[in-house]
Image (tube, rainbow, N blue to C red; front, side, top):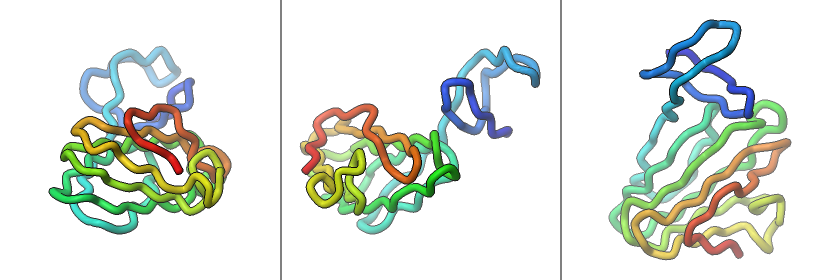
Length: 135
């Protein structure tokens, strides 16, 4: 497995149906690693783009630290509910750098609710949100 940074800023471990040469022209797909969230608590900032599948049977109360500027720039995280609960995701600095006025995302309680974030210069920016309320 090789970690590759794509021209559009996506960085991921490349596996499976990828063909091309080392100078570019890579075709195929990138498969992001998936991690199950089974309990409340802190979620470590990953070094590469990652899918977090929330599998806890009750409400999961998660926290995600701010990314490190430059080090994590371009890393994407997707938090996806696989259980029908009103999970919460807290980011101390707030989503989009909003601070305390926008630091908690509450999932709507349906399987498939999700939020996707991208790190840039120490802030988690929302790039996709389905049924997650930010307050």
